[in-house]
Image (cartoon, rainbow, N blue to C red; front, side, top):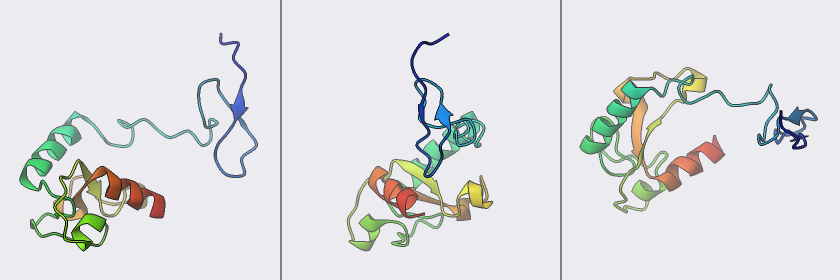
Amino acid sequence: MSLAPRTPCTWPHCGALARPGETRCVTHRKPTAHARGYTKEWAAYSRAWLAERPWCGQRADGALSGDDSHCARENRRVPARVVDHIVPLRLNGAQLDPTNHQSLCFSCNARKKVAG
């Protein structure tokens, strides 16, 4: 049993307390990556995707899209590091549908997450 104090949940306007060492209460805790669908199969799929589409902003057809890629909008070739779901899984985007994927660098992926 931990003797560390519980801390307030970081979720906006939540007054509940989080467990020691955690930032969110039970209600606002994020499910594990595996529970959200990021399995070994997804890891293999995303490695293969990035091998075929290595630039930030590339979509299934290989074309660059500036919709979510600041790099592509500025005509910069930046190596992609993540396979992003164009329509997020939490909004019922398709998990393994290539038309719902794009390659993004860390910066563009983080920018999209903040905006969305």
